[in-house]
Amino acid sequence: MTANPAAVQDDVLQIGPYTFRSRLFLGTGKFSDFDVQKRAVAASGAEVLTFAVRRMNIYDPNQPNLLEELDLSRFKLLPNTAGARTVEEAVRIARLARASRLCDMIKVEIIGDPKTLLPDPVATLEATKILVEEGFIVLPYTNDDPILARKLQEAGAHAVMPGAAPIGTGLGILNPLNLSYIIEEATVPVIIDAGIGSPADAAKAMELGADGVLLNTAVSGAKDPVRMAEAFKLAVEAGRKAYLAGRIPKKRYASASSPMEGLMF
Amino acid sequence: MKLTINGEVHDVPDSVQTVADLLRHFGLEGKLVIVEQNRRVLDRDTYAEVPVREGDVLELVHFVGGG
Image 1 (cartoon, rainbow over the protein chains, first blue to last red):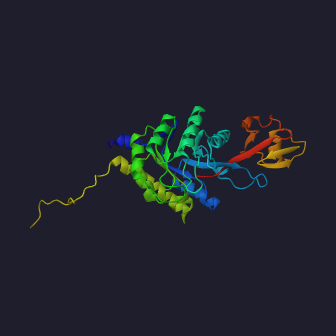
Image 2 (cartoon, each protein chain N blue to C red; image 1 turned 30 degrees about the horizontal axis):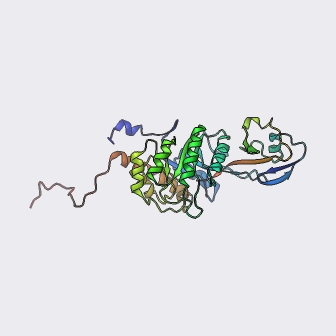
Image 3 (cartoon, chains in turn green, orange; image 1 turned 180 degrees about the vertical axis):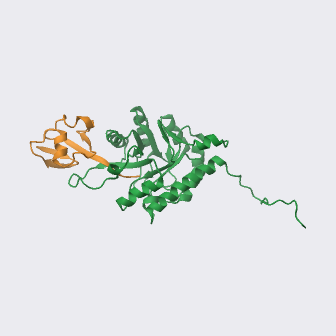
């Protein structure tokens, strides 16, 4: 990648028809406090927010709902199919989400195992094909497998979202090599989704060349989620700038930063 | 009239004739509610016209926090 100042200035993320300046996608689950959640969203600078689709509590319809307080002209909603274990369940949730008319993006999330919450790759690929066919902007949450990522792209996915580590673990990037293979080969944006623990992990993902990072627990579970949201914003920006700037190669031996010339002995 | 709503059987008054009536009955008017009727997702513009009938299976869903 060449460092072109004009290009860097205009460094935007394009997913399907949508253009984003922020490369941090924020999940909205597991916040303990509604006000903290709103302030964390603002501090993150995120333009893409994920949501889940669930039954309403028809006995208590006036519970606070983040969506009702958002300026939807400033955010794109990325509903997920979380909770789905099959292709059919995921497609059903996606159709419900789109019927809101607030969004046509969908994060395909089909869990294949209740303990690790790792995605079912076969079902994810199948659901991606169907939803692309139905005109959704499809962002599948996937394993960190380069071949699967390629097949998802061939199926028409508008981005691929390999996990850094299992959901909610905060273990950070477990397989940077596989992620770099996926990034190198990708023809659509690569968003590192799940398992991010700290801003260092997010910066690392961006330095690897990821186009964005999606995280939730790392912010909602922090002692101070608002401050952590801002830390992630800065980390994603730093990592992106570092990637565009091009880091130095790693060397086995030292090279002096100060000149040898002009030494007085 | 008995309807299955979100997995539970509810007995709603006969004045409930359309999906819009049903939402009003539960105090959900003006809320962002997505309705699935007998496994068919409804267009939000049609709630006032779509009738509900004895035995219908309805899902009333919305967006909640999630990652």
